[in-house]
Image (cartoon, rainbow, N blue to C red; front, side, top):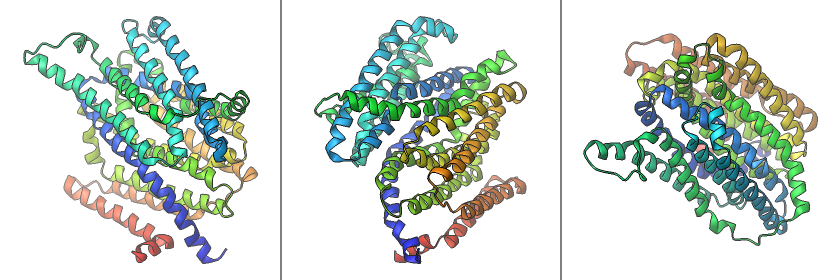
Length: 498
């Protein structure tokens, strides 16, 4: 391959992916950052124990949304290979999710009381109903959002997402700040509109209403010929169900710790408090999660669309390299400025900041694993995705049962890091057998080494003055930027052209 092909041929494709990621990121980054501002609100209004309720129930929500979408989004992308079939694939997958989600909502209402009792929320069965509605509405919205991504309607996608976030935030402010303020100053609010006894439950109410509004806004995008192709549906399920298993196992990796901390911590009296601290500090690592999510929104349809190109593997390798670079920028950006970032959570929660670097690296490894997963999606070997996720789930479960009773939520953080690292390595090794891509491992390893060295230096210098410490850390961050600029000819050419 000549130098022109190596450095400049991927540039247009990378710019396309970066542009799509930026637009999807508008909704996710701005939205997540706005939602992130709810964390200081929650951690200053609620006690760690009360916030533990939010952390635990949202862990179950994350798990169940995987069940309710059962890999259908990726199946939708895989079968939308020709424009003539797009509408039929869309309609079939949409009807499938609508029927299953409606059934789930019905079950949530019928069995709310026994489920609440099993989770030790016997006095709040309404939590289960609200969560059931959130999950059902979000699952129904999944395919319309996938349709917008597949059709390249990134601005439409972003606008609906931003409206969802705006409604959620406004309702949180209304229920948690405005209503208590008005009552404190003698105003009477109808009990049907606001009941102080609901308390932390208003977090779920706000989310439920926002999810309903989102589904309503997506109705115009559902105006297609509603046709259910039973044969196509079976093919979708055969392709997607291994991804459901992978998704469930993956969600075990992501949420099992929060679901089990309450059960496994040796001191039951402080379990909800510790769960709240862990959940709040997990949010501090949110920038890495946002980056991975926005990248995935753009990358999945992009990867499939480029699969038949001659230089597809070279392009995937370049994407991986720049993904790691930007992931390391985020890692250093959070850790070098943690003295500022920590103020986004309340003082009672800051004892858990020590898990932040562990979770940042863990999520970066998860993002690399997602990049690597293209080999089993393109080769229709999605069962390997299930095997890898089950492998990770086994590590997560074993390490959480072992470490939580010994070192508490630190054990959960280390289990997450080890799990994602192991999944990343094994996926790479197996991918080399079925769909070998020559990733620039040496270059990626150098970036990891330099970023790690910079982080270690920042931890060693221990400057007492916060302003001086931030100044030194800024110099260190700029050194990494300069190093990347020096190492990447494509970036240098890009800047020279401008």
